[in-house]
Length: 130
Ligand code: THU
Image (tube, helix red, strand yellow):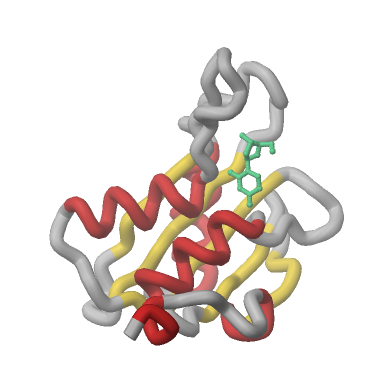
């Protein structure tokens, strides 16, 4: 899948966001090493605290379907500046995806690319539990 196709997949996923409280819709498209794309959107809840971000929805969907190896993730929000993944999502993406390429985009253009290791320096992870 091309870069722009992955971003388009994230834009489409964003349309399904449940963002009744923040009105801030986010879409994500996670690509596995074999090219499968699993999408996610943010899902809010009246308790607020049970909200799940688009990136974690995509990762948990992927894991629950048996995917284990990932290459990159595209994240889309309707913001002029790029919307990077929150801290909790960085932790989850690192745990299950490792040093993913993180592509940020809005509704009209790509807005930056990062390696996850740069977004989450000095991570706490399973290596420390051994
Ligand atoms: N959100 C995401 O889904 N991903 C991000 O990277 C940033 C924040 C969601 C959570 C909440 O539903 C809304 O955006 C506002 O924080």
